[in-house]
Image (tube, rainbow, N blue to C red; front, side, top):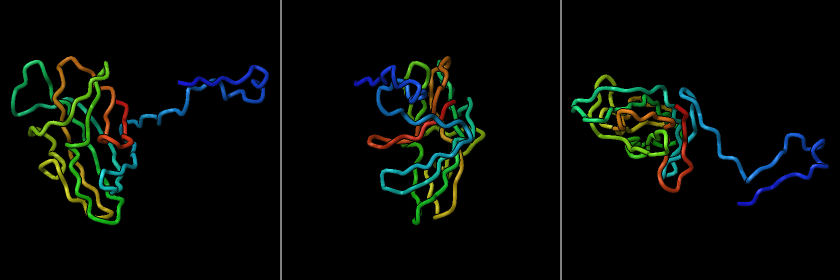
Length: 157
């Protein structure tokens, strides 16, 4: 890693420049904010995490709980969007461990499209929930949308 610092003589001119170790990562969105996103097929969409929390599941889980995010996917591409958020959403808990979505049924909030995938016409949107099985004592710190090779969309929880 290359660390760049401005010479002290330039401080009056570059007062806000300071030191940097390269480009800054994009800031995390907050719940309720929309992030433009492109899937692996090159289709564009807007993703919004509308809320999150613990939910019950139809199958009791020992030492685990079901964490659910409620989201909206808006198709901004010119073609029908076939999307499966169960495959590209994950949550990260304190300590950096990541958990992928579960296909388990959710009580109180339907999976996107009823089964976890949806066909969304151009200009339309779909909403629903995605669930994650996490340890009972874990605290979710962020939600991530993306898969290998993509710039992820991230929300701070």
